[in-house]
Length: 422
Image (tube, rainbow, N blue to C red; front, side, top):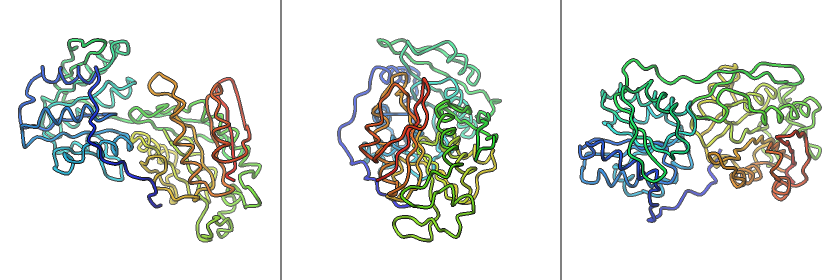
């Protein structure tokens, strides 16, 4: 794999904190001890505003650092571009490695007494965050670690307090600011177990035979350890095509046929002339790993790549593959933005079940970059299989990037399309 994506350019324009971020910062200052020469944790900063403001809070203390952790590869890269000076000076620490670092590993050795975050969108993600912070506190000996997590009042519930109270000895609400407020959780309990993945199972057809695939879900990964309906509809249609040998195009030998006999001495060479390369199937946005696991099970003679921007998804997919006994040689999972590390015209098959929501709001633009990525990495004759909400009209978008589109399945909620790269 080679890197083809441009890196974000540094910028001097720092975003202003929004109302929720302002209430987080105010509650942190009211908690006190910001003036001590201690590190501070910022978690899940999507814009850079919270990280930048926290850097200002500790600016007078040369020994203090801000450790800003986010599960998103894209957000990590954006923070590095937004704040290159503090990063180079060592005042800002980011998880910039090629591999995702769990929060408790990223914060190892930090002298952090305050962690600032937005409230996660799900209780499972909030519990995961709280338990990880308890591990951070135990490893660093900071029993005074306090989490200040803010959100919009309309999205806050008593269940969030209860979730935090299971991990912290004291939980209270801050004063409100407009329509936002924060929860302040102090005193992580010493007897709290580390976060564990949710467990589940999906029964799907693999080459026409029903097979159970173990599922694992960490943190806030989409679907947790459950098989979502869109993925199941896609797999039903895809498995029929695999059984029928339909995954080849334009006279090429199909990926399914190559897999059936162990790739037949690599007869299916790539269009770029690399006769030694096995075919490649990609799960773009791998989530909890259901589609990646299917590819590894159904196409054992080819290479499989699962890729996601979210560190929780990468960890979940790897755990799913291991639990299903499918973490074999030739199966890889990467923490990446829109396949930026994947070569052009190098893939024979791409599966895509993308996000359509930003929080609770449908955002159709979230798919555009993923469709662009699929078009870039598919070889001529390679196929995209794409599932989307039936009320959204993506056929023209796919046709514009790839060519002729075929509807493979449709129900009230979801539509499955396939397209052959021209």
